[in-house]
Length: 160
Image 1 (cartoon, rainbow, N blue to C red):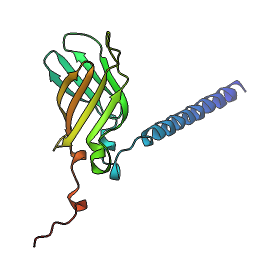
Image 2: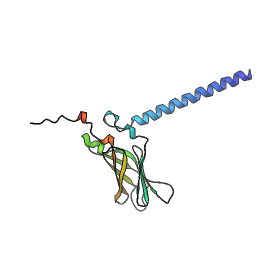
Image 3: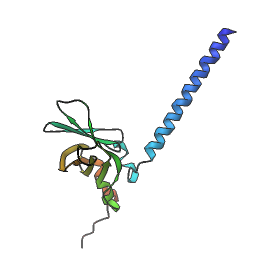
Image 4: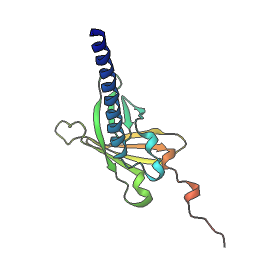
């Protein structure tokens, strides 16, 4: 009788674990679908990826749809430069040319850090440049094939 109870307890635990895994997958799917990944989900492949760039004494990192950070090459830890906020390129096709990351680590005697990411078409996804044009306001330039126009969707050009 004890072995029957142990077997039932084991089955119950396995089923409970399966339910927990399914609940986690549902939550992750719902979080994934909260973002605007553009027409045909072109930007979805960048979710969960991170790209780094070494500039002088810092390494800059962007994890699209998540965060931007700065790390000292000789130091420990990361400084948050912002968390994903929104697409900020305007309307129409330009919408997907800029991203905004806000509410990063507070600057000493200054605002919370933020990052504007300017995106251009390129053969591979990579971070090209990181600058600080104003105190605690960062600007990243990156390229990705996701920013390239689909030639099949371009209006046909006609010659006279």
